[in-house]
Length: 147
Image (cartoon, rainbow, N blue to C red):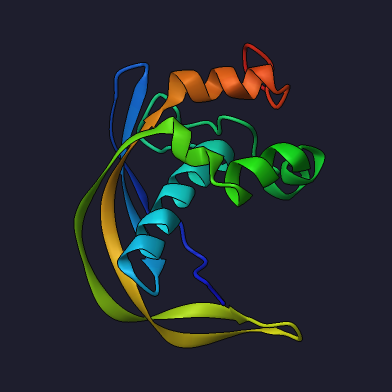
């Protein structure tokens, strides 16, 4: 298993309901790279914010590890069981190519950085922020007016 430590997310537009982002994703094949891009879009929205947009502050907060720990069940369901897909209204494939990239290879005994072959894809991801925010509120991950 390889982990690609980057978050290449670019703001496209936001109409108050749906946020459009152009995201790079990495994987061994097109489907895994697209899913990686979708997850990166969500993690960036949650924990980093989207620069040059009205969502420049993170939707949840900056302390990613602590927040994931304190809301473990929510994030296990959201990312582990791919519930995040229910908040993505559309994903448009822009293009992709095989590249050598730096990744952290993870096995049972260790983790080390190395160059790996990966498919790098660009996709436009459309996130329904209105329903996502309501879900975060309903699950007590955020309060009604911020965190």
